Length: 90
Image (cartoon, rainbow, N blue to C red; front, side, top):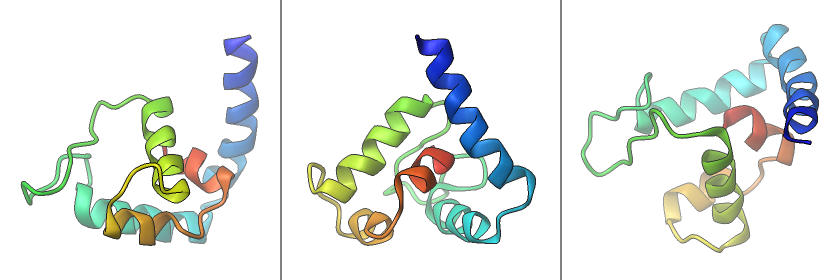
């Protein structure tokens, strides 16, 4: 079951990444602006996301959007993300 879900996710995400989706590139730039190019931020106030698993990152994005996690900056960033965008960013 997990393999089927992973495959379905890849089928959704890979085409957008392969065509160089400009909107996704802009979203990634916002992420790297705080979390760093490699997921290790320069500023100590921002969390290190390097090494985090897909599901953890996706869940955090979803929880910020739903208000289950509170952070003014992150809630503003994820407010208009679609499920697919959150999956691709994770």
